[in-house]
Image (cartoon, rainbow, N blue to C red; front, side, top):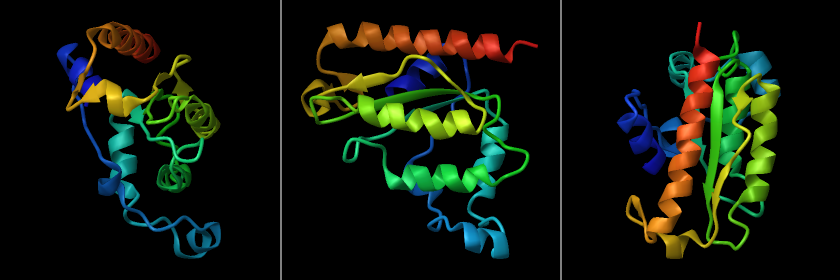
Length: 164
């Protein structure tokens, strides 16, 4: 929500999706090959085709990202033409751990790069998030400035990629 608000304040349209809105069956290549793409994937693919950039804020699960997110990426990978190709992606994680999700974000870069997305070279991680975040705001003002700078840098990166 914090990143979406900043992108919107910078004059860009924002589409916000929760994982629950992207409920898809468990990806199985054999079923996909015989039965085709799940109909639940098409609305996401269409939305991805119509955006310039994607910001993903994912929790850290066991030093990686959630299987549900991997499932969404796997289904999306089957769409042709690939809706993630050429899109910019900013990865973010707020974790209750001391690591802040950095390992999870390192893992998450790989499938996006494999699908020809341009992953922004900096990620945002916040350790001990349960003590640093309140509802849609940082508990400490000093955390806001680096976050704002990262999102602003991502917006600039995306704008440069999408110039014609």
